[in-house]
Amino acid sequence: MIEAVDGAGIRGFVHRPEDPIGDAIVLTHGAGSNCRSPLLTALAKEFCVAGFAVLRYDLPFRQLRPTGPPIRSADKDQQGIAQAVEWMKRQVAGRVFAGGHSYGGRMTTILATLQAELAPGLLLLSYPLHPPKAPTQLRTGHFPNLRAPALFVHGTRDGFGTVDEMSEALKLIPANTQLLPIESAGHELLSKRNDDALPPLIAQHFTRFVS
Image 1: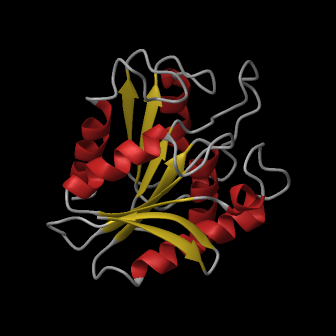
Image 2 (image 1 turned 60 degrees about the vertical axis):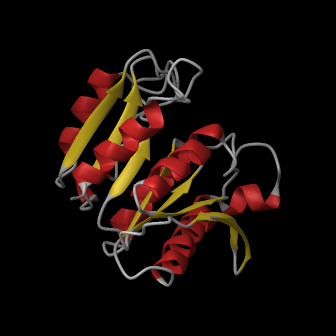
């Protein structure tokens, strides 16, 4: 069952499983997308099949403008993530995990360093390690303060960082981390070649990671 949510600072869709396990995950989008992205929609359905309640939601910058990148909105976007997690905590009796694609995942990791109790585990999809063609501009300054276990899913053709670069960066994180490389995938991860196999692969890996 899918329900639309639009209120209390949250806009998105809730997927409620037929056979709930009691846990939930909230997922948000990248800088150029929204909660209706094919990747988030497919993952929400797959996690729901696995028994998770799922909230896929728009960050505050996207609620203000239907298109365009975030502009000086990091603090508000992190507040939006915190609101989404707290809202979902009121919906389920079990654990609430958090994650997102690209910018949404980066904001989630930053918030997790500021709020250690945010989530017991993170799912980071195509973490934007550095701008394309600018490998020295690393976005890892907060990694040594990240205490939440995190599964990173990264395409082998991602221009925002190679798999080797990601592997090296994860050494900065003191918490348990895993890197799931996706062969031939770019920054969007999902493609016509893997749209059947990728969502269940990610859901299965994350379920095992947090078990």
